[in-house]
Length: 278
Image (cartoon, rainbow, N blue to C red; front, side, top):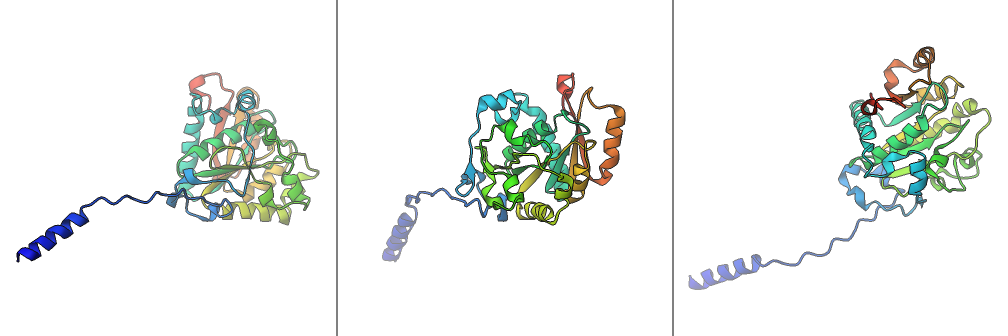
């Protein structure tokens, strides 16, 4: 009996010893596969863009172009964080993944809003974002961000490049960009083509963990946005305070399907606390 007690005591002593745990190796996730995975099952901070071109941005250039969400210490980020929260809530309730950002007329701040919203979404713990420049008449995303690239959607649409070689990570975790560098002739016809429809379908169906944000041309300047709207889940309208007339806003709303209108962003408002409201 004593020997049994001794054996049990010895076994207990061995089991109570603290064994050193093996070092946990960082999980390198190939960006070719990240979008087919459930982002909630991953440590997003471990994502490494080893198959996507990384082009770091210039903070000074971003500040000059009012890309405020790049700087986490900028207190004005709160306006886009609030917008992001409301946008994501509605999109999740409806299982939406794609959003178009439009305006009635030029200079309303739609590209500014699309960029800052995309960065803010990318900072949300359980989301990633893709920003696509579909303003084929006056593409500005690359210019606003200061992206120095030699390949863009122009090359893909011309049949000279595959989409994987055009996607760029701007040095911001969980964000990728599809830039357009040059204006395109007959953009409405192009958007309605089988090739572009196929691309939109690929982006919206492949990226399970991502919100895809399309920057579109102004609604009243051409029919590009109207051709595009049936292919996206929802639409965010950006209106510049004092720039768009009541008639222009009403005409724009007439062209946006009511079931797809996610909300209206008031840009350039005079009251700081209500500079952006939803």
